[in-house]
Length: 303
Image 1 (cartoon, one colour):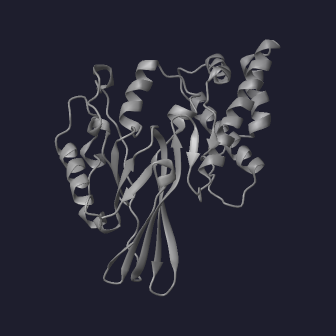
Image 2 (cartoon, one colour):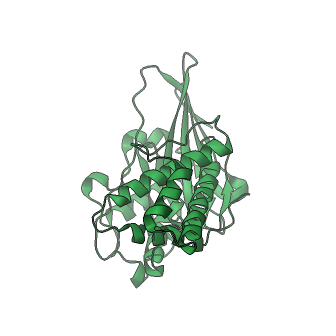
């Protein structure tokens, strides 16, 4: 913990899992930050082509409540949720949660992707063992070039990446304490770590269960000789009618069953969006759903 005037900044990391946060007060922070900044300014050949608006950057205004994440574990980090907790001089508290990395592409692989696409994605989105990242309210910066350069098939060849980061609002009251916590971390092998105030682990498990339920309905219906329209109707009886927008999981009081129901509603929403595409026939959609049953999901477990 360190003090800057009356403001205290605290980092809550997970050293037992090899995940260490280096705060600005540390003598190592400036050197680590400079290396990340240098790599941002001198992008290697094959780096993802972010539009200027979404390019990862280090924002000076966020420096006091930022930290450098060191992955000292033997595993790559596939998912990461960071939380900033603020306490004001009057005793009011609020939090700002940011999903820095989504584990869905690698740990919930229900959307088909080639081995080449997954390898490219892994290099630019997983935090390799030995690599580091700058974490701030404005987002995350850094890449795996501090461990090794990308192989030829890990270099980005085409397309534009659109992403972004979210910053917190300016509080009206004076802040006396800020805490940065690694709230949820998924490793590549499915192991999970962190206090998980956002219930990321339960959301992920519910998402997997929902996909498997729907895949089983599609396969059973297909084997029974139902038409694609009949299969989709059977799926809708379980998922419910598609909502106008994806449901939110984030409610600490919901049960596992309610979370699974929300995941099924999210699938209903995604299928409705897919059915609007002119090139997507009902038969193609059903076969795509059936393929979810073949997806290999790692053993999701809390470490």
